[in-house]
Length: 397
Image (cartoon, rainbow, N blue to C red; front, side, top):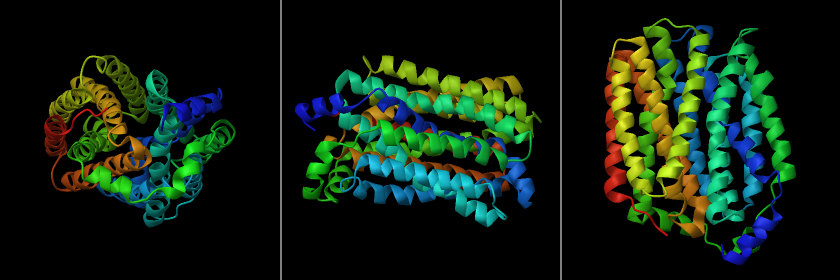
């Protein structure tokens, strides 16, 4: 996008543009927060072990992975705003149907609709931001949008735990998650303009060119592979974190809810200091450092037999998550500037693939071994991510 079209895009955005995208990303965390917080209760409802119920997260991530490849192609043919609205509709439908799941299989199916929604929402919020802003304004907007993740974790963990206390794990889907999606639909409809340049030129674009440029360039491919291992390492830890503390130390759901607030604050802190560090440190170096520290923290948190030390290390994992996610977005977004919708869809696919690996293989490890073995596995994935990003990914301008 040239400077003239970007300037026009900035003029067309109103005061609700960034809040609308903020709220869109806000909708992505509550379902996974509910699953992590109430995994044991869901298992009791269907008579299943935690390791098996955790496969809901793996299935959701797998669906998101497949959907992301389709979104990468659709993003050059359809309005980014339209795709964002479609993603919000899928997540609203998932919330409404999960609340009435009658079996584990139907829960698996309905929760997986979140994967389709996430595959649309995550890349489209970033692409819309790049469509309408550049330079410092774009960096500031991305910072605010990413901040929605820890904010939604804080609000979501409190709301979900409180609402569930009045009934069961089903009630938060209807009383919290569904209304948030409806509100976001209203905000995006009213507050987000479509990209004029995208509508004008999309018909002339080869939908496969973005995939070709991304997957045949060493540095962009390294970003995507690094994303897979990063998401598998930290994402797998976050899926089983609450169950670890509840089963190992017999803490209450209230304790875990407060821990989630601490997680969110630590992630927000990590995101903010990442923005400062990236002024003087390359994004790839910061990403690699975050994954090394994250791997050490994960292994230690799941192996050291002390509640408060484990809790402190778990909070440190979330600081490193903020560092890694912010630097990864920054490094990946400009790898293929002409096809940001495509590469950010593949970035989302990488996150989904990583979450699938972390949740599914992590669940299998728990079924046969223990949390210490899980920590070693996830820590190794973090070290692999650091090596790939440091040696093969590079800044592109």
